[in-house]
Image (cartoon, rainbow, N blue to C red; front, side):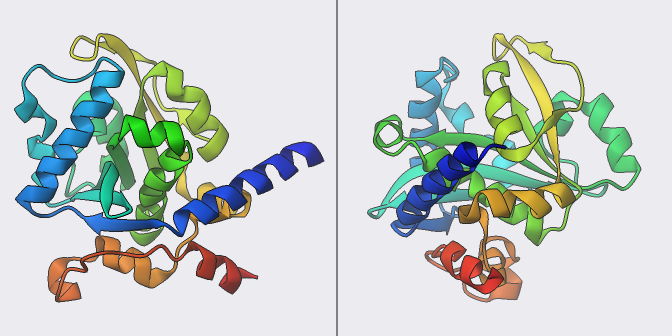
Amino acid sequence: MTNADQGEIKGFSAGVMRFLESIEYRRIDNADDLEDVARIRYNAFTMVGLAPQNGSLLIDELDFKPNAHVMGVFFDEQLVSTIRVHHVTAAQRDSVAVAHFADVMNPLLDAGKTFIDPVRFAADPKIMREYPALPYLTLRVATMATVYFDVDYCLSVIKPNHRAFYKRVFNSIELTEPRYFERYDSNIELHGADAHELKRTLFERYPFFRSQPHERRMMFAPREVLGLTPLTILPTARYAVERAR
């Protein structure tokens, strides 16, 4: 990487870090919030031609699985994006990656490998146009889950036009050949980022992905451990960066 590339990434990261200070995360666990998630998903998926005709499919059974974590990103008290992550293990295999690529995933799970499967990324198209850094701060949820659950891989189930982004940011590699799915009318690819390599390099290149343990705990710890579920979760990236110096 050239000095110019490093400078560009540093400048970009500083801008994202400033935007992060206006963001809050929330665990989505009630009917009203799920309605807002369905709305965001519909608006985002419509923009890329993936919205189902049946609106009820915007909330599916995988949203309610024990290993699922549906998260919302809020800006000025408004839900602006959302993502769902599954902590996938041999004992809990519910996830989009396993459903679509069972022949690849099940042998890895049988061998004891563990995964974070982040899917259902959706952002308000209007906010996205004004704040193009929003996908990074939404995918920050996946990086926190990767650290919190100490998994082997962070997955990406993506369309081919997203391949370059995941390779550039997360050093993701293809785990199998692309496959055509009629429901998406597109090829779908399964990529994976080695979690140990991710933790070694990602946070140096993009400091806004950093977080402190208590933020990750509020995001993903079981409710019986937390007691009261936090209403909002404030990002701790800046404090984590200062602690790492």
